[in-house]
Structure formats: C-alpha cells, structure tokens
Amino acid sequence: MKIAFYGTKPYDRVWFEPMGKEYGFDIHFIEASCSQETVFMAKGCDAICIFVNDYVNAGMIDTLYEMNVKAILLRSAGFNNVDVKAAEDKIVILRVPSYSPEAVAEFSMAMLLTVNRLTHKAYNRTRDFNMSLNGLMGIDLFEKTAGVIGTGKIGQAMIRILNGFQMHVLCYDPFPVEGLEAEYVSLDKLFQSADVISLHCPLNSDTRHIINKEAIAMMKKGVYLVNTSRGALIDTQALIDGMLEGKFGGVGLDVYEEEEGVFYEDRSNDIIMDDNLARLVTFPNMLVTSHMGFFTREAMQAIAKTTLENAYALENGLPLVNQVGREMLS
Ligand code: NAD
Image: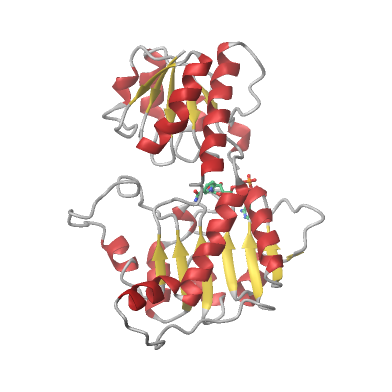
C-alpha cells in the first residue's frame, strides 16, 4: 500500500517510518498539510494519512476518488475535518478512536494547575530573581466543584484525576455511563455550579459553541475553563468578552476555532493576522497551547500502531473496526 502522509513533523517519522516498514507500506512523507492545493500530491497513492488540522472537503473527496485513492487514514480520534457524508460509497475513513485518554486528561489538569497557580509566571520571575508573589495567588482545588462536559474516554480519565484532588465532580453527557464517581446534571446546572469546567465532548452540530454568551453568563465569577477538545466548542468572541468582564479566574485553551494553519507551525517571525488569537494570548490568566494534549510517547506510539493496523485491515480485507460512518455524525 502506498500512503501519502500529510503534515509530517519530525516526531511523526520516529514512529511511522520503522513501523510502516514492518508492514511493508510505502509511505510518502509530505510536510504540507492536506488541502485543496495539495490534495493532488496523493496521485498514485492508495490512501492518504492526515491529522487534525488537515481537512478533506467534498470537492477533495471527488478528486481523491478520481485519483483512485481508497482510504483516508486519520491519525486522530476526531473526524470533524473530513466531509463524512461526501465520502460515503467513495472512500473509506478510518480513525484512531482511542490512543491515550490519560495523555489528554493529564494535560487538561496541567493546564488547570498552570492557570490557577501560575507556575509558568513563577518560573519566569525566579529566573530573573524576581521573588515577589504579587499576582500569583490561586485557589485550592480541594473540595471545589468541577464540571466535566463529555464523559467518554478522556472525560472519564479526567474525572478520575479530579477525584484524586478530592473535588466534587458534576458532569453532563447525553449518553450517561454508570459507575462514575461523578453526578450527572443538566448543562445549565453544571454551568451554574462549577468552579472549574473542562470540555471533553466531540465537535458536532450539537456542541458547536456549547460555550457561548448565554453559557458564560450562567457561570460563576472566577470560574476556570479548560478546553482540550476542539476549538469551535467555544465561541471565541463570547470568551473574549467574558475575559474582558473579568468573569474567568483562568482559561486554558489547547485548541482554538481558527487554529488551522497556525497551530503546529513556527509563526514567531510573522505578523499574526488573527486579531482574536492575538487578543487571547495577551490575557494574563490565559494559557494557549498548540493542540498538544495528545503529545506523549505512549500516545504517539499507539497512534502509529492503530493507524497502520487500520491500513493493514483495509489491504487484507479484514473487518474495519475503526471505520467512520455517517451514523457517527450526531
Ligand atoms: P469519546 O467518543 O470517548 O467521548 C466523547 C463523549 O462526548 C461521549 O461520551 C459522547 O456521548 C459525549 N458527547 C456527545 N455529544 C455531547 C454533547 N452534546 N454534550 C456533551 N457530551 C457529548 O471521545 P474521547 O476520546 O473522550 O475524546 C473527546 C474529544 O477530545 C475528541 O472528540 C477530540 O475532539 C478531543 N481530543 C483532543 C486531543 C488533544 O490533543 N487536545 C486528543 C484527542 C482527542
């Protein structure tokens, strides 16, 4: 199988190159993201392999189909960046539904602890022998109320971590699961009661801007918000307005609505044209990271393994256990 591997970074090759060889795959590593302009680079390949900030729209599906590309191998769990309906009956979509929920949950807690206890600022201060504590006061998480939106694999891992901090955990999910050390409540109740809110639901038509002006209005003053899920769960303008009003104790964003083309790239010498992103990074109680919740050795290894197993199953007519279909859209 010949695979066009888009958005290649050095750390992708570490895992995919040796494992791909073991499977006998011919992987063409391409640095460019998959887009309207670069889709033609997959000519002659059987599959394309893409990550979260590559996209495949309906027109590109047709192009891939005409080029006889049979599969889209997602190196991610989320599939909001592919037009799943357009791909039906044309191209198989395979994903990595789970690689290390703990990696993302642990990173969510790292973000929460950072924006609460401001360790990133303390680090910079003490390197400059500024030993002042002014402006660095946080809150105890012990016995506070956390709200988890989405209780799938990552949400459950986050609940276990929050339990470890002895927080009272509220959660919301239209498909509740039993046996969690957390109390399911309505979304409104969660917004009204939580001192800390962490987002772990997928991006779909129901969840787009689940954090909007109305939701923020319901939240407690001083609430902490962490989003390691997908950027468009939050209405950025509403978040900025909330920040300006002093609503939030702290906010951690590992994902951002308009992250495509910016995240994963070094733009330090560029003029940033996205005013909202430029504004977000200026808030002293905001931490923006570049969609890196997944980024652990264990997760990277598991992503490579499952992606290549998916390709192997397709090539050998085995059951496609990780196929993405239209029924998964809502
Ligand atoms: P999952 O499918 O195991 O869980 C998602 C949960 O969200 C499910 O329980 C589902 O019922 C629930 N859900 C669906 N609609 C909802 C709604 N309207 N409101 C509340 N909950 C709803 O997925 P997961 O593995 O836990 O991953 C969650 C998300 O994390 C992914 O969709 C992806 O966007 C994101 N993610 C981010 C990173 C990162 O590096 N930052 C890495 C992996 C995944």
